[in-house]
Length: 277
Image (tube, rainbow, N blue to C red; front, side):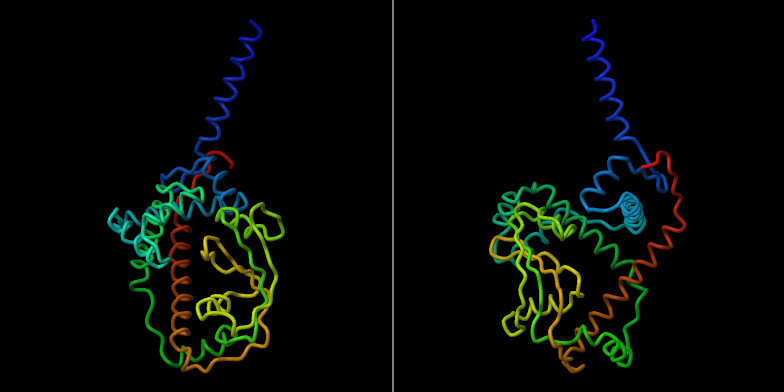
């Protein structure tokens, strides 16, 4: 009898714990956020609990905006985007699927990631359609002067190169640079600019010192560079980088406009805390 009672007590405890994990913690304009969502976001993105909550609140507001503005993406859009991604990597979609699955990611999860990115791009495009006016030549020249370091070519770049066959492991390493993540190798090096192809040189010079580049696939590996320093940079004449200046100015204004838009939504959102996360 004692064993039966003990087993029953353990079953109840586990059930209650599972219920607590799935319990609603916060409600954002009638959209629930569970304790499990918060926990999962903390660990997946390497965020503090407070930042994970704020991230999830913003995601709920994005979904509301997509619904309000009628933003939709169908399977045709997703498959088209996957074909483009495959072509950019010199393979077909079947080979891309094989590569993704070999690296431990389910194809359905990958397709969902692509779909969410397309939804966000469409949403941002609608939000920005009336918010940004094209800059004048004078505005671009002023921006160029204020950000001259971003439009310069160094003689060499000091980096730490991180590589892994496992994208998740590499992302974990990038979130904790001082850690030793299994399966991730790192190599400090100073690379002469004339030894870099144009795409990689542009990627490195557009990454601020003390930051990581985006993750890029290279010969079956995932690679990211932590930029330490630029050696002896030389400014490029404005006329030669005018298009880059324009793109950089537009990207900055887009980010400002999107942040402002969602800051206003966040300020007016009804956020109820039912259980402290």
